[in-house]
Length: 116
Length: 112
Image 1 (cartoon, rainbow over the protein chains, first blue to last red):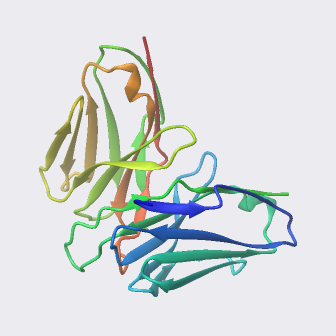
Image 2: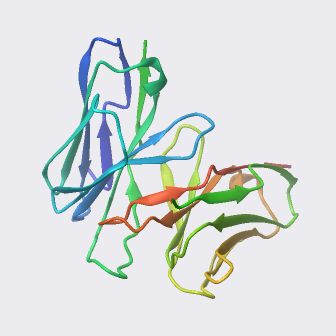
Image 3: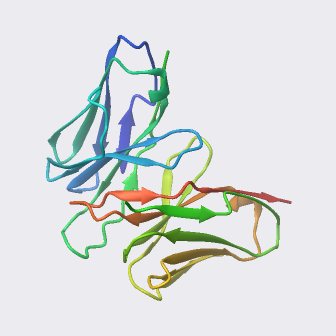
């Protein structure tokens, strides 16, 4: 595997289900991100992890719960979602070295989530 | 709160023509990124612009950054059909790592 991978690629779930999205980066990066892409809205940053520590949480509802067990893996645990949470969830990673570092973000293919 | 505005949001153009996509942002930042997204696909990094006056070119695409005007442009020269995609600009939000704030994207269709 190369780059950033995400599983599953498609997910349909009911509002009472619990599911998890998985992201893995094979780039030796140390920062990972979750973004939400909804129709007709800009990509929204959800969570940032830097060296496995969460450094940013953009007022995301608690029904979304991130987990970063190591610098290569990132999960997004989902429970009691709403239909408006249907979107493309993108994972990204970058090499963060502080300050003015380059930090280009590389994106995975995304998980297309539909909440019924 | 950082806001990023792109225009136009939709652009249909003929092959062989030139056009420019504009990206304005509301607060000081010296890192701006351009991405391309094809339908059903993820985001592909095109350019990273790190300083005032930075200009980068790849094929028929050229990006520039004016940090004083808080403006970046993506110029398309002699467009070809393969450049049809949605183009996003994104600006560094100033978070702990590199949380980016994205524009809404410019949906570009290039007709033969």
